[in-house]
Length: 89
Image 1 (spheres, rainbow, N blue to C red):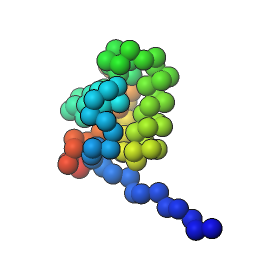
Image 2: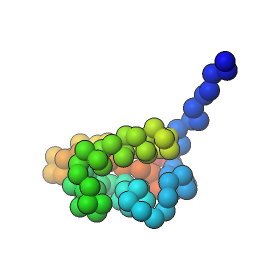
Image 3: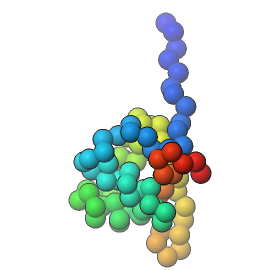
Image 4: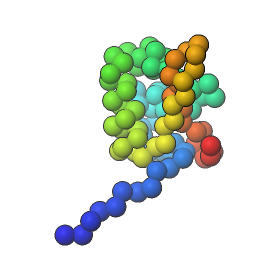
């Protein structure tokens, strides 16, 4: 049986996820210069915090191979970010 290789992680959020819908909202918020906290994402989607974290981990990082970064911010807490489409970090 031939082994299947996963595609390399992309540093830009291309048109991998639907532009509309909740996942699209999450991507747009993560692409902002200031990024987004879990509170920002739960407010925008109406989801619970564990559902947002699951979408980031499962859909964006694993399924769509997007490079979501996290940065601790003393004032805001953990901030999640995606580079702008077409841009590199």
